[in-house]
Image (cartoon, rainbow, N blue to C red; front, side, top):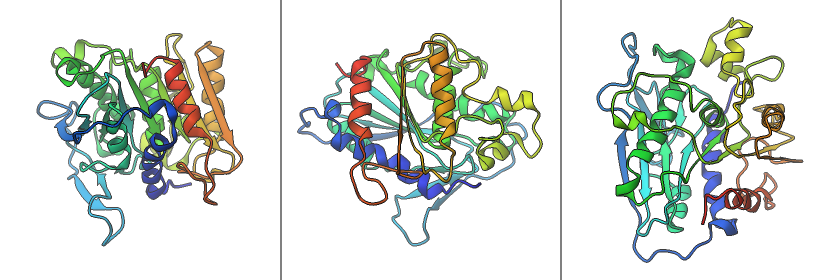
Length: 325
């Protein structure tokens, strides 16, 4: 079953709808505009690229469509986009978009999600990341390398950006949810050799939000295209388990919010159930919401146009766990 990258893009945009509806994010708007800065994740070339021969491409998701509605293929130079509020309140959210591990549906120009979050004083970060089938030495761990580097880079610059280095959350959508889930459970795994002072810092997020996430690579609920992109066509069971986010949850994993729809035809919602059960077994503060309808990529509204209940639920969860003062 192939992921529709358009749905992954809508998933990312759904966080903008969340901000509009969630009271925990509703703070006084700043009078001055936010600013956008894009920075490379790595100084020089990313690690493990000696056998990489692909050429990075940036395309419009829809030919002739919005010039800011882009997707990145064969990523060789991953980046982090920061939308900085005029008056940062110290909190930050690292957002990881989807794309089925085939591409990353993201724009350097930002969008409604990060603009609204910045309006509330929360510094928004949107991450581009390398893809596992492009020849990188780390293989399936290459997106995790980039996620670990991203949160460390945010933490290393917390002072000059007006952030509390302890109040950094991660959110991920579809395949980006798999990256976020692995960051939340493999933050202590050394996936690359440290290259500067930032890499001495923790990669653990304070909290996590996973939306219709890809989680498991085990049968029968693995998402087919993600599995193929990560591990090829004939992975062993050990290889599957190694990249299944529900496997070997540490006891210090961060509080995690999960939301999915029962009628998701792209990523089986059993992925969300498995993640919640694994977190609960380790006594990790966690919350799961499975909605009757919404499909894959739901935002504030479901397919029929009705309001979805998850925005206020996520806001309350993050507030309860200290992300918002």
